[in-house]
Image (tube, one colour):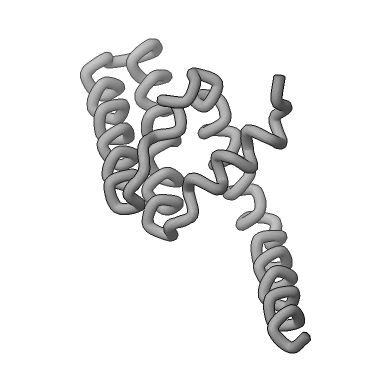
Length: 113
């Protein structure tokens, strides 16, 4: 059975478009907030956020031209929120810029050789 790192790598590979990443970064938290609101307060607000979040995810996949990862297995319904949380943590801590800079340097270095 693959580990979390394998699932995350596959998820990242299937979400390479900047628009898809942005739409997932907004849509997944909306889905989670919708679930919480539907359980704890007015279900209509929760349902609206839930449906709106899924609409953003599907739009992102339409733009990228691939199918949602959860069609490969329900485990991706958990991997998605972890992936978004990791991306948000990287932005908050600034490690996103360091990683991006390192990848750019590696690519530039590879082209020179």
